[in-house]
Amino acid sequence: MLAQKTIHELHRLLTKKEIKPQEIVTSIFERIGRVEPQVKAYLTLIQEDAMKQAKIAEEKILKGEVLPLTGIPLAIKDNICTEGIKTTCASKMLESFVPPYDATVIQILKAQNAIFVGKTNMDEFAMGSSTENSAFQITRNPWNLERVPGGSSGGSAAAVAADECIAALGSDTGGSIRQPASFCGVVGVKPTYGCVSRFGLVAFASSLDQIGPLAKDVQDAAILLTAIAGHDPNDSTSAPIEKKDYTSKIGQEIRGMKIGIPKEAVQEGLDKDVQGVFEKDVEIFRSLGAEIVEVSLPHLEYAVAVYYIIAPAEASSNLARYDGVKYGFRDEGGENLIDMYCRTRSLGFGPEVKRRIMLGTYALSAGYYDAYYKKASQVRTLIKQDFLNAFKKCDVILTPVSPTPAFKIGEKTSDPLQMYLSDIYTIPINLAGVPAISLPGGLSPDRLPIGLQIIGPHFSEEELFKVAYQFEQALSFKEKPRLEE
Ligand code: GLN
Figure 1 (cartoon, protein in one colour):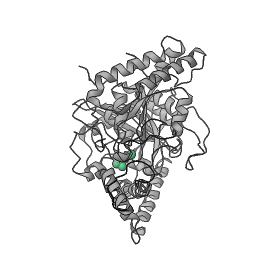
Figure 2 (tube, rainbow, N blue to C red):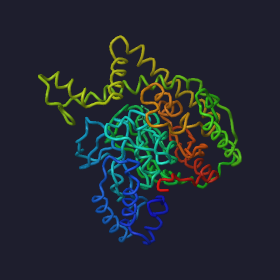
Figure 3 (cartoon, rainbow, N blue to C red):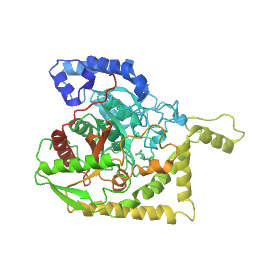
Figure 4 (cartoon, rainbow, N blue to C red):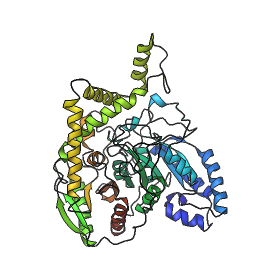
């Protein structure tokens, strides 16, 4: 089945003209027809459009113009703007919003003649860790349909894991690419802040948000990042970086590299199965000739608290634009302007989004700003400094991705704090702005994937892919979800 293949495998077949893009698209939509009723990864599917894009890609290939993503069907998280295609952020507020422009990453992928399959489900405005905060549907984990796929990019991760696309884009503010990748047994990358343009990504917390790939293997993730990374004058926080080939070090040995294990990595709340897999994974690095060194991230314990001041503060400001006037949902029942604002925002936003707006508005209000936002920003600097210090002693750092494997649907919805605490290993990376990759590290005894996180210094993505690839080869994780058995 072509839908099961990777970008690099399909690219080779397309280049040799052994297959046509239309056949890949057909295979993907056949697969979607069989498994999507159970998984529910997509909010919007664009089959007709995908077939048209496939035809255009075929013409390019016949002319010998085959770029790495030409003819490759991709899924896009529904907070990335796609011209003429609904972009809802899984919110009633944007239920019928059709962007008049493409995000920069979409423009880039279109220029390569990649093919879009559809838009994937997510937690409303990317706020959540389970995709249960979607206003529209619950996405299920392809490995176990009673479990969450993680979040907020749960639809993208589930679609990749279920072979409903070849690879996908997600966004990561505090773990939203890496944690669902871990729960669904796929590879996910949170690039260095500023590495990928945020132009056209619906803003949640602007100092933390990054777009990144979700893919079936490390090489595919590197190929997709190579396409989308680079400077963009339309994003003022975009880094002035040269275009790079992030696959260039894949295949190189890691003998002699220093791998840091934070002494805070194994802590209370860490599930025994996750700990077991993590310890085995560390041994694999040793067997590859890497030197294991202990490092310390002393401020790690404050990361979740800092994040839940900074991210909601930025969100409360970013989400002020949904007022029923400019675009999106408006409640018509209001008696005056203020009433219209109130009704629109009360009906348009779900409970988690309202909770964040209230938290953020409180933290930024007069008299509280210094005590909360300013203090959180200072501790954020200390967390970043922890990483800079650790990287003086090692080349990359390993941690688990999430303290538990995928939890049950409904298990944490009544306790927001429990949900927030599940981001302990992913949030510090966004606060520090450094890149990290999540890739399969093993399986739990009840057959749930458990991810491993590899963290590198700012702009060290090439090294990260090199290290991740060697580990992936050594572990040789060949398990797949058993959806159709
Ligand atoms: N789970 C975290 C939150 O709820 C991170 C979300 C994200 O990365 N978008 O904010």
